[in-house]
Image 1 (cartoon, rainbow, N blue to C red):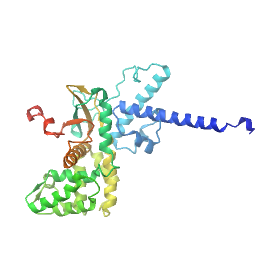
Image 2: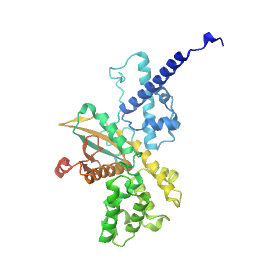
Image 3: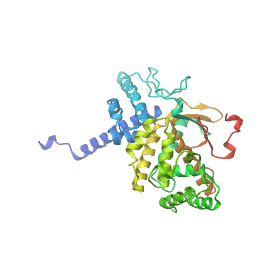
Length: 364
C-alpha cells in the first residue's frame, strides 16, 4: 500500500475515538430502551451471556437465545424483541415522539389486568406486586427505581452488602421462635456483627452459629413443621437455604427445576461452592423485577414493581438489613433511593421509620 493511502496517526486516533463513542451511544440506547420497558439490571447479562451490545443486536434475537435466563425472565425479554424491531423501524421512517418512544402507541411496560393476571399470563399466586412510596420528585421516579435496584443487586461492596444466601438465613431467623435464651443470645451476638456491617464478621462463623442454634430443642420455625434436617444430607444452613428457595418457588415448578440443575448437587458436600452457586442463582432471579405502568403522584409518588416471590423475599430482607445497619450507626435508613414505604401483595410491609408506616386500617 502506498504511504499516501495510509491513514495518518492523528486521523486513525480520530476514527478510533468516533467508533468508541458510537459503541457507547448504541449501548446507551439499548439500556434506555430496557429501562423504559421496565427492565432494570438486565443489560449487562444480555451483553455477557448473549453478546448483545445494541438495539440492533437485541432485535435479531430469537426465543432460543434466552435459554440462559430463568423462564420467568426469558419470556418477558422475548416479548420485548418485536417492540424493539418496531422501534427501530419507526426510527428509520422518522416517526418517533419527542421522548424517543414509538408513535404507534405500543405499550412497552407491563400492566396487571382486571382478571388478576400479568401481561404474560402468570397468575398473582406465582408472583408478587410491591408498591413503593417515595418522597422525592415524581419526574425522577425511574432514576430512583434504577438506583434502588442497583443497590439491591450490588454484591461487590462487602461494607454495604450481605451475600444473598446469608440474607436468606438472617430472614429465616427473624421469623423464628427461641425458648432457649442462651441460643437466642448466641445468635443475636453473631447477627449483631452482620447488622453493623464492615469487615468484622466472617460468613463461616455465622453459618456455624446458625447450625448450632437451629438444632436446639427450644428452636421453632413454621417452615420446619413439615420438614426435617434428616431429609437432606447437608449442613443445617444449606438445608434452610434450599428449603426457603423451594418454599418461595413452590407455585413455579421451573424455579425448583433450575435450582436443582444449577445449584443443588445432591449432597452439597462443598459448602463454599454451594453458596457461590446459590448466590449466583439468587442474584439472577432479581432480573425478574419489572415496573408496572407509570408512577402515581400523591403528595409524594408511588411506583409499582412486579417480581417473583423469591425476589420479594430477598428484597424485604435487604430493606430491613439496610435499616438495621443504618440504625446501628445512629442514622436513619440509608441506601433506599428515597423510598420510605414498601407494601407487597402477599402481606409484607416495610417502613424506613415508624413515622413512615401507616395505620393497619390503611393497609388492609
